[in-house]
Picture: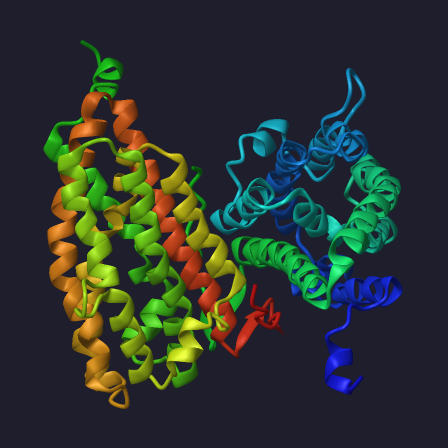
Length: 253
Length: 253
């Protein structure tokens, strides 16, 4: 067997998992806006803009997961996957992730109305988040599960916020960290199921494994574009080839 | 009848048309990237990036119009609307708008492969353009027709390119302007149908007229976000709060 033929063989389960994890190099933790956030360089207005815009992503998650359930005929997979929806929406009086995000809003000085009205959501954030929901509606459930694998990299960014915010942004009330602490546990549990589905389903050929990497890249692109849009919408000092960049005002639709 | 009640009456057909035309204030002709283009300040690489990225919008148009046909039960409307698809795709050996755009690519130094491979298309452009197709799939045909009304403002930007490029970018081959000359005539004809449908359908109440303005804003947002994404992808000198912005490489999916 020659080298060319070897290149077309599927990677082992361990190699494939490693390739997926290597995609973390393009995670939005390295986006200039998130670097600034970690380094304590964001203004109160910029952080508020981020919280209000990211809320649009938060409320999309259970709809995206509903789309996955709608395409999945496997009872056992659905029984595990549904927990993601109840985690975000809450069960009965238990506070879910969406409500915890509104509390994060309060901790950075936004009213419930500021957040749930979506009036601060920038158009580029809408388009990126909607692309994620539409992907889950239009693709197989295994492809959509694979797209969720950015949660491989999420605990790191949650942990960064938990450790840096009290020092960097002492004006943020402590309850603001509840969401990240909650997700730290959930994301670690969720990723096991998502990774298992992906490693099984896409392991039939190298081509399929490459497709999984492309799908994960698509989701990384969504998070990156969200950060780009929030950066453009919230940063006052942007210079393009030395000239001031001006923003189009956010108009809600 | 008091002032408050008057505020809720529908505008006259003329007033409504004027409100729609006023939306032109937010047209991407005023986006920093397009201002730079008009002023001759873009580099060859930036213009190439714009042409390659905008191609993704060009190829989406006939699919968007197909979605409108798929939702429209009115034979007479379809008979007029279908011309938009044949304009872009061509009929038999006639060159359509998509092929004319590839020729524009050649005129700025891009190969057919550079363009049709979509390898230079930035993720933010994909999400914005896909939002336009999904809107046309999911909304009534009248709402989608209304979203096409940015063509009210298009002749101005086409004319700007036709008059400024030969002076500002003398290195661009003259055939590069064919697309814009072609659209100058087509856009003027198309807009009559789109405007007529919108003025009729949305004139039943002030609320409906406001909805039409919001839909037009949604489409303006798409064009604006496309320009934002191309600007971020192609401009080397971007400073955010005084620090260099770095780009995520375009990864095709």
